[in-house]
Length: 193
Ligand SMILES: O=C(O)CCC(=O)C(=O)O
Image (cartoon, rainbow, N blue to C red; front, side):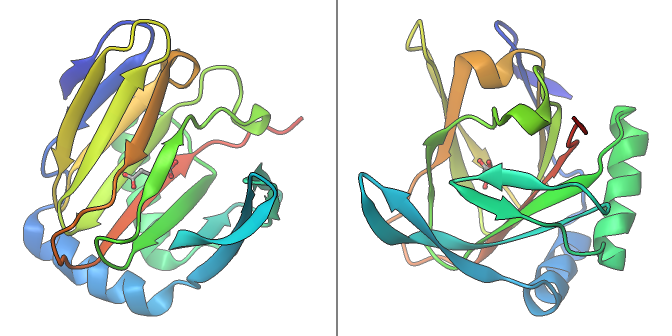
């Protein structure tokens, strides 16, 4: 694992966690099989379409509220279970859920945010897998303003852990190039209150 951020939390990169042929086959299967949904979110009092498709899978009871929407988990898809077990072996962590994001093209994006919802606990450990088109992943430190930008390629894995969600924000900006789809799977642990 390559450390990209080591202060006030950790951001680690494991390039090619999945080899390109496996990652590309997964892109096709998950594009077809998962229950992709277009959500509406409220920003500054207006309801707008979220610029990506999402779905939430996990153990029964792994309920997650973000962007003002309560997400009840869909039962695990076998391909997601397989990835979860491999990621648990690699990281030594337990995950009970996965947020799936589908970026249809360069107009789909993720704005600046932290994954700091209370049900993730005080120091969330996220294993975030990129499949498909390369996209830029940006981070900035909320106090020092330090910024980093990395390309996440087909099959790459990043880990965000420790105090990362407290001190850093992350985003996936729009891309002007006409680009192919990308799926991001971030495996998480919902703490039961
Ligand atoms: O697509 C990505 O790499 C980031 C996704 C993300 O920030 C999130 O799901 O919270």
